[in-house]
Amino acid sequence: MRAALRRLLLNSKKGWRQASCSVLKSAIAPPAGGAPCPCPGETALDDHNTQENTPIFQRIKDFLLAGIAAGRWKEGDVIPSEQALVKQFGVSRMTVNRAVRELTSEQVLTRRQGSGTYVAQQKYQATLLEIKSIADEVRARGHIHRSSLQLLERTKASDLLAKQFGLPPEHPLFHSLIVHFENGVPIQVEDRWVNPECAPDYMTQDFSSITPNEYLMAAAPLQGATYSIEALSAPRDIAEMLAIDTKQPCLVLRRQTRSGGKIASIATMWHPGHRYQFAGSFS
Image 1 (tube, helix red, strand yellow):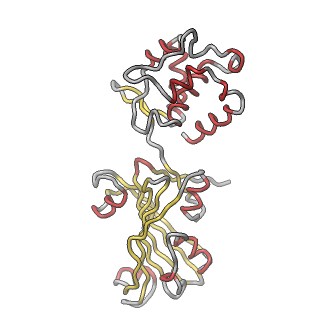
Image 2 (tube, rainbow, N blue to C red):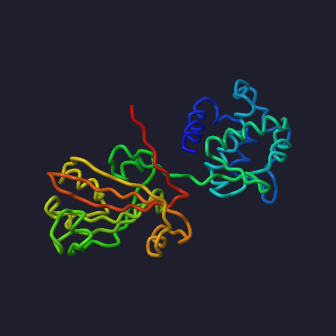
Image 3 (spheres, rainbow, N blue to C red):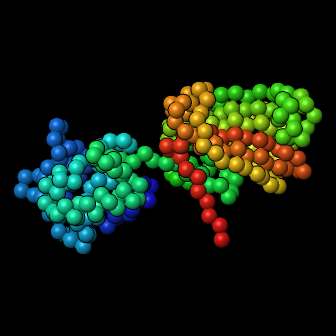
């Protein structure tokens, strides 16, 4: 979806601002109670001066993208049927089908058999092969990151945590629980345990302006990491923080980082499966 919207913005430099008023009015301010219609004396594809070199199917894609960008159709909303688009634009069903099919393959739209075509749920992405701050990843997409600190405490290691850290039972540990948001949508619950010997100032950090990962990368330079990923249903408290139902699956990333020959941090990060994905590449 992000790639398709970026392409729409690029098209604006090549004439989109001068597109036919019927397309823009339909995308941004449609008449209530019915399908958008051309202005009197015009059709949705009449602007030959600026669009004659743009394929018709691409103009239909741009029309749909403009509607999504303007908020006319939000995630989960049904878009006009192919038959309605054929009538509106005065083109063949094959042309409309190509536009819709391409937007579906680009994950902008999703089809439901017997129901219609809908604006797809956007999936936020995380990189696996590099340990990056979630705030940096969100900002790199041009979005707004925000975090909400749920818990910050100094406690004692359970037998299991002591074993995982290679520390004596009841050794002091720092514990934080933070919800991360992208454009106001909760995308991660970060449940992190930290070895005070590696990051002694962890408890004094302002985690509304810096992420635990950013602080730890500076305080305890990374030597290595291990991680695992699995799909799990969220416990009720996690589900509430992610604003999802307990029946919805989550992608759970467990990561252990090492610094100075010690286990510095153990984190469990919960992500709503319907709006998140992991990606990576190597060469």
